[in-house]
Length: 170
Image (cartoon, rainbow, N blue to C red):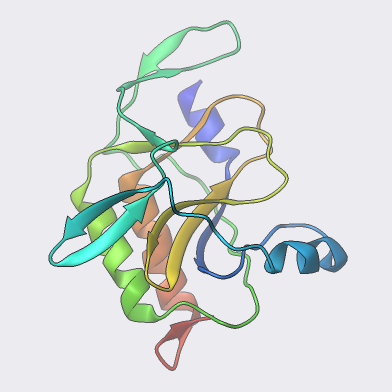
């Protein structure tokens, strides 16, 4: 069922463009923190004069999503917030700026789409990037997992509200 998959997603709303965070032991995390995000194949869009990049592999243009391993499908209700509790995993410096993350938040709220998150991944993948801020997500679910654009905006908003210190989102 669609809602069951959404609740199993593990999300990290914000991280710097120079590091990724993973929900693993600190020794595994140290190895991933040095990895940079390659956005060379990403699509650029203009949002109020600001250039946002998104990973086209994550954007799902269809409104039909698969509901179970049997292949049954249901229509996605994008305007509903289907994500349950989310986890926020912090990274070390450098941190994204609050303003850069707010651009992604505001852009996400203007969309009426959902994003497909890579299945059964050991870490997070970048989905959207603006300057110093990247929204990334990952899941341990083996079925298709989706996050709506309104959920994405809510996650970034919550990340800013919880972790903004001196104009950076720690």
